[in-house]
Image 1: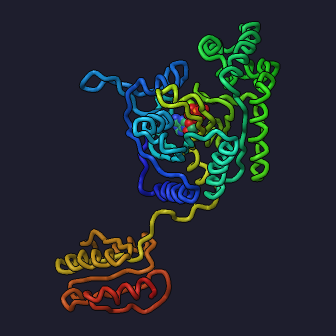
Image 2: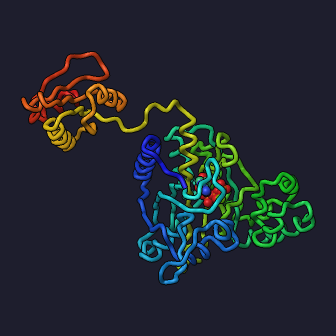
Image 3: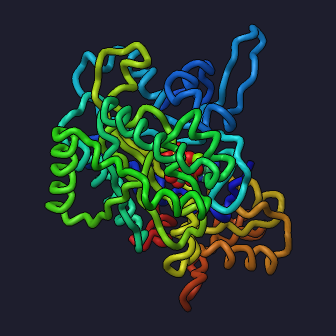
Length: 413
Ligand code: ATP
Ligand code: MG
């Protein structure tokens, strides 16, 4: 699991801030659910046959011998909360969440055991236009953040009946070529045959080229629905490619499935994945509720952002750096910093005590445009010297108690 240090937090905060504002403008409200849930929520909601439930969950017993799991994803929890609090009887819900998720995977670039997602769920939305709106919100967020070179891949998984029909065709085809499948796919063929489409093995992929396609077995109404989604995306000028092998890892998906990928991420290419999950709410004992959602991997997004654009110093820069040395000066400095913070300035207070030269070096490194200099001599007179750090200019002496005057100088008012 990974620590996020202050020096790299700037990008995270920018992503979170942008996302929050983007969702506000999109009429999507935030929901926060616990990190810990009863294991059966995921076992039921995600499906025993998936990798996530089968191999990746952090599951343990609490002190009352209840099986608990650190959430591996957000959708099941959001649906549980919506059912539990009767949100669904208040009409369709558009919600988003963000936060850490936990999966016991092999850590590598863009794959961690604790990672972070931003996700969106539309609960109670059936119209193909809602698929288009949900995808557009993801696409536009990534564009707004400045991530380029993205590909939107789409497929339709149809209805449960469509998939059942397809599953049996696929199993017939793959069983005839069982020997050519990689061991993982052979196991999936028994447990979760659609997941074979996901295989990264080249021999299996070659075999899949000739496999029956899901699109061909879709009922006319499913096919028509998919066409409406594609038309809607075209109308919004969101480019997409059709990917007949795209199946989501989780069992509850139906109709639209999509991924947004980048070629700049190596093996972990998928930044955002989602789709429609019309059966999930009912599966978790709620009223029949059509729904669509997506989740975006923050680490992969940050990798992309860090690669693109020359990232200038992104950490927060204070308005003023307070240089202070001496007993009285250090006490006055704390008072000064606190007063100016209350007036809205971002003030960084040097720990104090070190030689002035050393403190000035730190002031420079902070990026602050101004230093406030306080020695005992100044403090004794009730004065502070304001010194511009980024441009040439004379120091200005101010009364320590005239915070408004200091703010006026520093804030350029
Ligand atoms: P992958 O095929 O990469 O394992 P997934 O299908 O398991 O992805 P989802 O469950 O759809 O992923 O999660 C949505 C997004 O969350 C992914 O597209 C990815 O960006 C991110 N994500 C998933 N697992 C991890 C992880 N272990 N570490 C970092 N990001 C992850
Ligand atoms: Mg995975």
